[in-house]
Length: 311
Image (cartoon, rainbow, N blue to C red; front, side, top):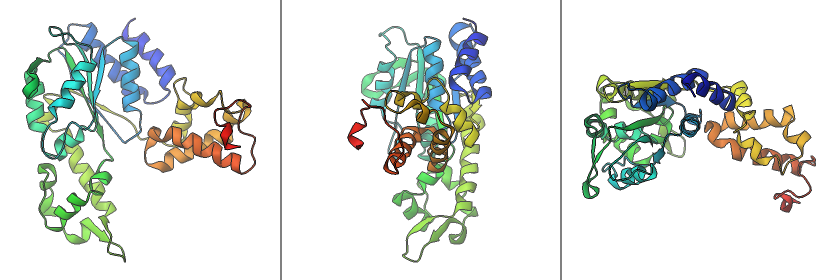
């Protein structure tokens, strides 16, 4: 298949993020089917905009080995054991290394001060995994997945709030903006003394962190930047109509007229939109919606549904 055919097939399945999908397909095709210089990729967007799903579907259709790593960048270090496990997932033997390695929550590498060290290893095409040895990664496409709304989570962390109180930042990235901060614009406190980040401050920090993700030193290593668009209600409704949507997993258990009704899909989309988790909240949105409707007397379940215990 040529890259246009691959794109059209994925576009029909995914239903959203067409511009980002096209860039991703073109980059992966050049990496694995042409003799172009390899490009690593940053997938940038809010949580739940389809970054992981899009990449997995593309890798599957293009028959590219795929591995993924979660939580590789702690405050203390880069977890070499997790990176090694990611390489194992690719199904590589000791001589040949090829495939896509997805790094979830890649913003943590910046926030926790490991980006320069990791970028240098990626640029050298050699990963030094300590006790696991050295690995030639010249045929691996590293994909850093960045959640731009992750700032809200960062400032929910007691350690970070404590550092903010003392003007002492652990993260080099956050240190950059230290001179612009005052207690008034960074922290708000409710009547019970509970502290949280001021929403304007969160937005400001988010923009600063995003610019650091896209700094020239980073882009020398991650040459392809792919932005995922924020999703509104209509985009979520469209995503729910996809052949790979989680909604399809419930069609054996929910009445056809109910699960395909405009009202049901609209309720699910509203739940997802309000969750702050994007498409990650799809399963919870579906189950909460039909359970609530059932409790209010709606005909929801098929006779042999695995959810029959609700009765």
